[in-house]
Image (cartoon, rainbow, N blue to C red; front, side, top):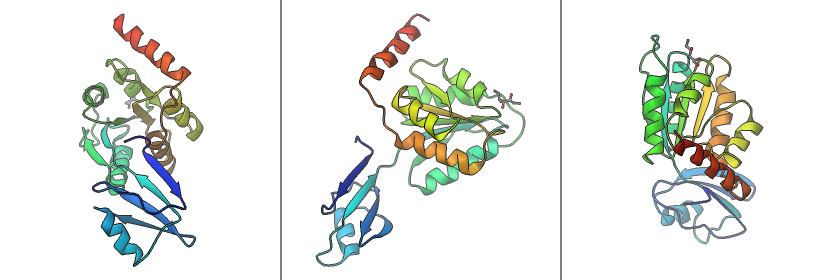
Length: 206
Ligand code: RB5
């Protein structure tokens, strides 16, 4: 469903799909619960309860990959995304031993391009090798994440479907922030739609 976040202020609880996480705001305090059905939300609020606002966060299917330069960060992001309720597949690497980033960029890129996953995240030492390799796959728009503002733009303007990160250049907390923005920010469409379509035309020249 789109948009991923449905914001509703001063309204009753909205129907929630299976396994959706709902953040509720009531009397100025925030609580996060896992809901399986609407009745669970109602029960947690008590008889006659209502909420001032609700943010519905839908889980995504996310493909992850890394070489040795991004191994540690990839594992940290994997654990975080799973804890957040996303469906995650780790395409490796499965050890910190030296390995070749295209071996992970390829499978992740194909999995995203095929539609089996909503987004991909690839980590290598600089993030650049992963971006170059993933962008060889038709339908992939991989972008190196540099700053929060820039990652918002790669979603809004470029409709990036893979985020790459440089494990040797970014701290865990900063990477987590970039990933959150990457997952949360919708494509702006409009004039950007035409430009992204022109990227696809370039792919057809190959
Ligand atoms: C590996 O040493 C390194 O080249 C790789 O992780 C990546 O940075 C390539 O772009």
